[in-house]
Image 1: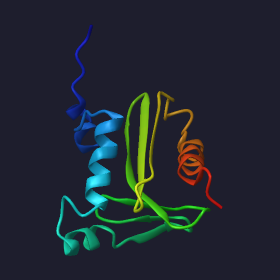
Image 2: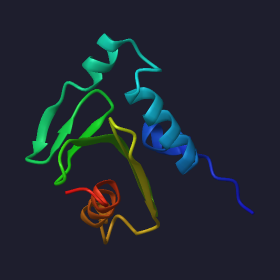
Image 3: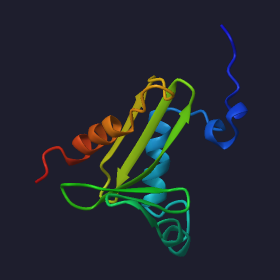
Image 4: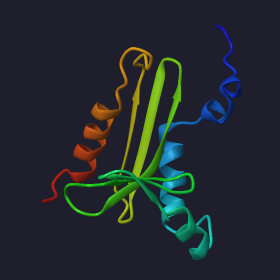
Length: 123
């Protein structure tokens, strides 16, 4: 087995984690258990990237068609793409794919999967 050193991709690959760890972290962050209220508000101050997406200080805000928003971030290294999203009321989802980003960017499909999971059973 070959070892993989993710830091070769700078900050894009500097963290190795599990989906459960990512969900736990974002749930704690949005639940006010990591930063002060002022610090979290600063992270959530976003600029608009497109009509449904805002980018803050290390957080991506995705508007949900069922109301509200999900917060999280994505990660990419060659061959892999992940995205985790958590809502303020505790719903969460993580998507991982091994799509080749140079030929097929899976972002739209990943957002659709996250949205479907986070809006399930909601009007």
